[in-house]
Length: 116
Image 1 (tube, one colour):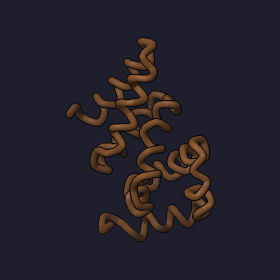
Image 2 (spheres, rainbow, N blue to C red):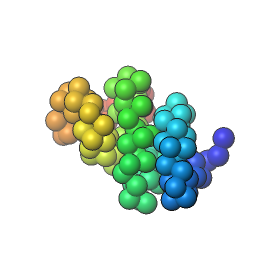
Image 3 (tube, rainbow, N blue to C red):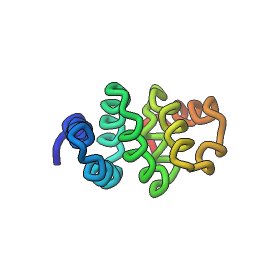
Image 4 (tube, helix red, strand yellow):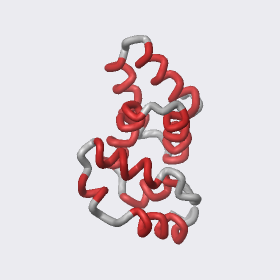
């Protein structure tokens, strides 16, 4: 498996080459990677301003994994909280966006630490 940053770069390159469907499949499958890898790939996609690819990565993760793993993905510093909530909204996951206000989710991140 490529590193999370290379994984994200590959998805971006596929999309840029007109192979959007292949990029989407790669990213959907990437949601099954360890949470730390998904977080690193998500950061790389945010840095590249690739929201479509970010949604393809995070949507399946938010649908298939427990909320505690999404909180862990958000990181101890909470840098991905807004990204997770925005992605959930764009992909129609209202159960996630209606679950808690962002500040409560940030508190969950800080309280959970690495013990999730």
